[in-house]
Amino acid sequence: MPQSPKSVRRKELRARRRTIAAERSVEADAAALARGVVELLDRLGLGSGAVVLSYESVPGEPPTAALNDALVARGARVLVPDTLADLDLDWHDLVDPAAVRLGLDTPARADLVLAPGLTVDADGTRMGQGGGCYDKALPRRRAGVPVVVLLHPGELDDVPLPREEHDVPVDAVLTADGLTVLRDEVLDR
Image 1 (cartoon, rainbow, N blue to C red):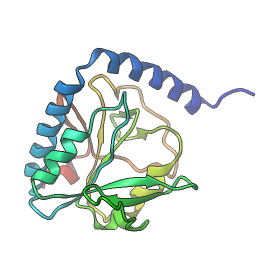
Image 2 (cartoon, rainbow, N blue to C red):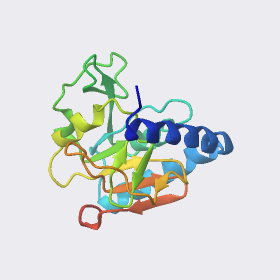
Image 3 (cartoon, rainbow, N blue to C red):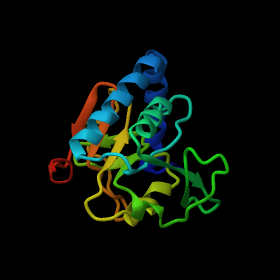
Image 4 (cartoon, helix red, strand yellow):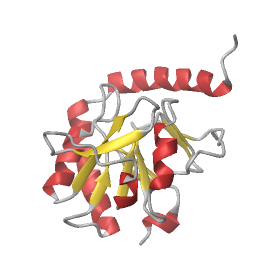
């Protein structure tokens, strides 16, 4: 059975990610992303008490532990996802040792969304791992809440990606090299 064009593209992107990640310094990237997210909070005027949806990265992804720590140190409430059996996302507070789930509607509380992805194109089309988790969660945020995808340098695509009806365009990409704004109307407050 032939693979869909998106499946083929994901396979290529995963191979590219493995190559890029092997050449990166996790420690240097972690520090740069933490600095970048603090600058982003300042740019957006988000202070103590802001709610940020983030995630806990897995090996090979841009590292989020230092970034999440920086958010907590700034007084942000950092909420991270729990993937459910139907590939929807519930959320819990990163610093809650009991990881009490907060519900599917948690994105409506967010002031900023930091999302994973394999790539994003110049139009803000994000390609993730293919489970559709964020496709379900992102529409639940309030209008005007920015979505910033964390990528490695070199993963922002200059080739347009296929966008389907359920795909939510993202506003920016943050890498260890800095922020790339794709949609000014949300990030230029």
